[in-house]
Length: 100
Image 1 (cartoon, rainbow, N blue to C red):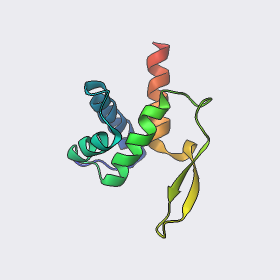
Image 2: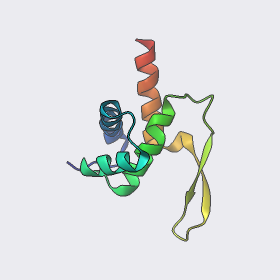
Image 3: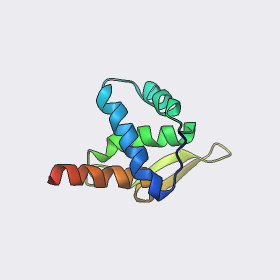
């Protein structure tokens, strides 16, 4: 199965990542990225899911508003976390779960 970064596919992507993390909570970041790639995610999307899904459990108050990523030339670029669909979707799911 192949996943995209569209908002509609984001919740499903987050649920796949949560499922993998739940099955193997002690796996390393590299192992999680590899597991996500084996589920059909590109390397970039696997890395984003690895970074943002577990972070959403901490909540907005304890998480920085921006993160650093490398651009095509390898330069550090500051990007807003709030615009990362994987993070916002994971945060929404975490909030809904805690509210239930």
